[in-house]
Every structure is written in structure tokens, then in C-alpha cells.
Length: 109
Image 1 (cartoon, rainbow, N blue to C red):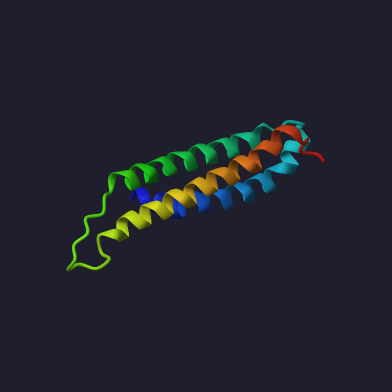
Image 2: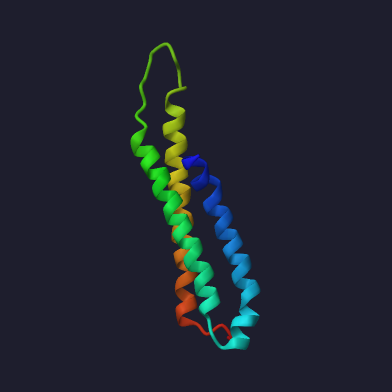
């Protein structure tokens, strides 16, 4: 479960954050306050970092035990945890990159 949250949950939250921020821009402009955009982005970034750390812990905790008679079966959980960690880290980086301009640019522009 730790792996799947980072593998599927982090990109889904990234896309949901992008959609929610676009939907909140008219309200943030009307209120002259970009705080709702920041709240959504902060929550998404915290979730993405948390599930990435879970996947990283899973990746570091799984050690492949290679058996000459069993081909690639032991390496699958390690590879899946590595891919989940990479996807979660990339999603966290993109969320951070989306969040930084919200501090600088006025939502009414």
C-alpha cells in the first residue's frame, strides 16, 4: 500500500491540485487574497512528500534476495518501490514548482 500511494496517489493529487487552483483563481481574485490557492497547494505538497517518504522507506527496507532458480520475482517489489519513489519525488517537485509562482504573481493577472 505504501508503494501504490506514491505511484498513483501523488500524480492524481498533482492533477487535482492543478484543477482546484484553476477553479479557485476567480475567487482569489475577487477576495484579493491568494491564500486559498496556497492552502490547496500546501496540502497537496505535504501529501505528496509524505507518500514519497513512505515509498522511500519501503524501497530502502526491501532487499532483493536473488535465487538462481527464481528468475525476477524477488526484484519486482524493489523495482516497484523505486519507481514509486521516483514518481512521488517528481510529483512533489512539480507541486513545488507550481506553488512558488503563487507567492509572487497576483491571482488577478
